[in-house]
Structures are given as structure tokens and as C-alpha cells.
Length: 258
Image 1: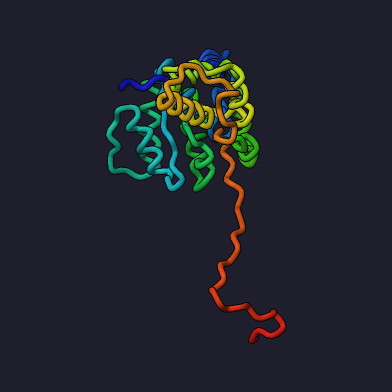
Image 2 (image 1 turned 90 degrees about the vertical axis):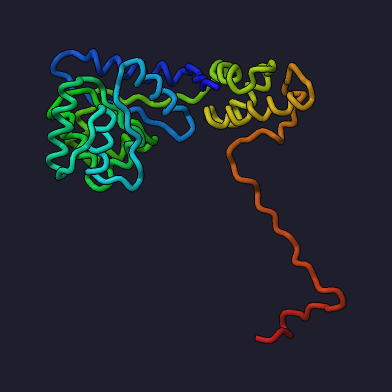
């Protein structure tokens, strides 16, 4: 089955950010940051943006090194990384970016702040002036202030946007396509999930599943047990009483040994 992607407001925000960086006037810097909490659909926006702008896209891993990052970037450009030092790989990546001249998107960029990787990203941009978009967690802009020479290269800082009811309706067309989800239920799902794309999708899939079993074609808030809505919060812990052994009475604390 072909995967479907909802074009949410975040998609428009990211496309606008890419457009702004790609078409920037001469003399302005060409890096930018797209940041926000996990679950807001940043990666979905990146997928669509990378397709629209023919950009190269890498997702940085928490255990990556500078060398591994450069190898992965080269692979995204269709270049087989040679056996080479970090300095040599940097030069090869710069030459490759200059030849292709398309944006480079670095997802989970917070991991680049480890092991000096962000300085290598800066080298790639400064030697090519090819647009580089950093995508990461909500603290990314603040954390980048530790590198003033990178912080001041940012043309724009674009926050990811939580879903609204209209976004939830678009998600319902994908995750609950066989039923009509009531506007009141959509609104409550958005409220309880704080606009998290991932959690909204989770709830809609649950609604679809119940409707499939019950034969319902329309599900409103009145027809749905609100306790079944998934907010993402862990369940409250319950203290269970310790089972006593039949026939044995616990001694008072003052008479216990020790």
C-alpha cells in the first residue's frame, strides 16, 4: 500500500522556510533552523520539502562521528565515500555540494552539537554557500548560541506548529478513512494531545479500529469513551497492598527483629 502524507500547516511552514533560504538576496546567509517538540510532524514536513526542492536529507544518529556524517551526506548525493581522512572527506563533500547546488537538510541536528560535528556543518556551508537547514528539537536554537560563529549564520528560525482541528481533519482522512469523525471528537483529541501529530494519528487509528468492529460510520465525542483517548502521559502508578500469608499476623514494628 502506498503511504499517504497529510499536508499539514507544518508542511507549509517548512516549504516557506526552504523557499526563503533558496531565494535569499545576495549577501544574506543561507542557513536556517526548523525546530520543535517531538511528535509535531517535522520529519513529515522535511520529506515533502526535500522532494519539492530536490534537497539532500540526512538524519543524524546519536552515536555518529564527523566521519560517519560526511559519509552519509556523500551517499545522499549518490557518491560512494572513499577511504579517506576527515579532512579529505570534507573537501570531497564540499566539491560535491558545489556541483549539485541543492539544499542540504540535516535532521535531528541536536546530535551535531556533540563531537564537533556542528563545526564541520559550518565548514560545508561556508565553503559552498549552499542552503543548509538544521531540523531539531525545541531547544536547538538556544543550544546553538554556544557557537556564535554558527548562530549568526542563520537566516531564519522557524518553529514547528502544533496541529489544529483542520490538521486533525486531514489526518483523519488517512488514519480513519472509512468513518466520519465528529468535529467535537476531533477538537477533544487535539486538546488532549496538545496538537501532537503523532498522538492525534494514534487516537484516530483507535477510533477507526473501534468503528470497524462495531460497524459505526460516524463517531462523535458522545459515542467515544474519553478515557480511551491517548494523551501520551504515562498511567498513574497504583500502590497495591502487600498480600498477607494466611494464619500469620504481622508483628508490631516495635517487636520486629532489627
